[in-house]
Length: 171
Image (cartoon, rainbow, N blue to C red; front, side, top):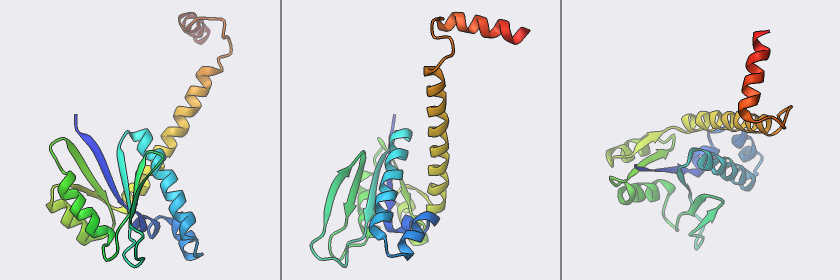
């Protein structure tokens, strides 16, 4: 089975997702980054995919770094390197027979370049919709789990409970 790997152009998502755009406009870029990473971390864990979030650091000398944040890999590019340049290079290295690589960006030129290298692409809007769908699934799964944990008649076995529910529904 192929490993799923998602590259995310971090600042591209911040500039496209409504709740993050508001923070960016209020000059709260660090908060927008933190929220993006939290949401992508939940998404990655629930969907069981590896996510690498790439941020431009090309105008900040000496900031290049790569670290783990929950279950994400966060990458700040080196000086004179854009997130697009990093992602293009990484897609070339990572797009193997054993890996399904997807790049999330709304930059159309970038989408075509990664597509030419064999990766799939999705827009910031598509990822935002998927992320919200996943959030709803997480809520439903949590609600279902809690209901199972708080059964009304805990002394009955699951089989006995099914029989009783069947009997009550026939009334």
